Image (cartoon, rainbow, N blue to C red):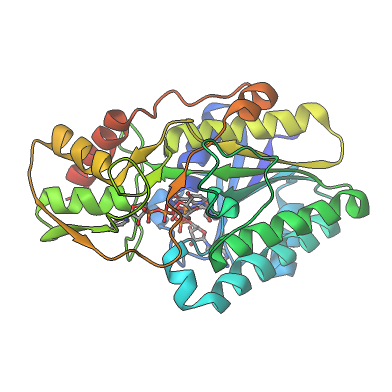
Length: 328
Ligand SMILES: NC(=O)c1ccc[n+]([C@@H]2O[C@H](COP(=O)([O-])OP(=O)(O)OC[C@H]3O[C@@H](n4cnc5c(N)ncnc54)[C@H](O)[C@@H]3O)[C@@H](O)[C@H]2O)c1
Ligand SMILES: O=c1ccn([C@@H]2O[C@H](COP(=O)(O)OP(=O)(O)O[C@H]3O[C@H](CO)[C@H](O)[C@H](O)[C@H]3O)[C@@H](O)[C@H]2O)c(=O)[nH]1
């Protein structure tokens, strides 16, 4: 088995946790990152290469230098709301950047890819309780469009280049490493849980609830929050699946819990684990937000033998709170 894995975007939030899990599983992760949003102190790989996705020649050289057998690709612009305001950089980085990576993999003869897709490819399917991978892709924001486009590109590369890929559609990544080695540090931070935690810490004066008039039980949006360490183990499971199967194909697989939590439930969980109170303000909806996104998780269980084990909301909130408190 070739254990050397190129982790593109491995200095970021989900990438850094996945690198820790890969090492625990006996893989040799090589982090490739341009540090546009990643952190040097979150690089836990055996090697680090500073470079951009669009630098195809550098990617080829890196794959050859380290004898890479598989790639995990996290590098992207990630804020769905911002993608509505400035879509072009999202298509440039997420689509054109991935084309460069695929070209490099083809040149270097690396067939296996685990790709960071997203629940945002499902769009706003309000009449569907659980989102299964068989549903058509129907994103409602440019971020989701960019990820859906890459999934289409991957499908074209199967018969053409023998690509072996899994597109992991994460639901809402959250929480932090239980040992405090990494956590969520986006700048600017736009994600709900770290923002609620900042309010509980007194680092922001309030948390805004973007819309309390959705057609949901308490009027706020529902998401499927998945602990980042569960996402990390999902990548190890996906990689093992690709290495064991060794046949061309591309398969989307949801990584979530199958349970939805509202914005208000998240706020209550942070209040519980922190013991702090703070101001909650209801504001108009944020553009591009679907009302509900909850995963059907059967394929991940059947195909990868994977299920979330750290993702009850209080565990997520407790680990995120501990990381934020330790980070000062
Ligand atoms: N955070 C979530 O809730 C979530 C949910 C679903 C899917 N995803 C996807 O997961 C992946 C990782 O998300 P994250 O939250 O860890 O984001 P992140 O911003 O923390 O990590 C992204 C990493 O990629 C690097 N990067 C970005 N563009 C690059 C480029 N052109 N060349 C080289 N490196 C580059 C950044 O420096 C960073 O280290 C993304 O593809 C995102 O779309 C995230
Ligand atoms: O200050 C805030 C921030 C968020 N929200 C709400 O909280 C929910 C979660 O918002 P996040 O910004 O934390 O996450 P998103 O669901 O918008 O998107 C995240 O998860 C998606 C998959 O579900 C994508 O992949 C994307 O990359 C990632 O940012 C949304 O209803 C949002 O409107 C608020 O009410 N107040």
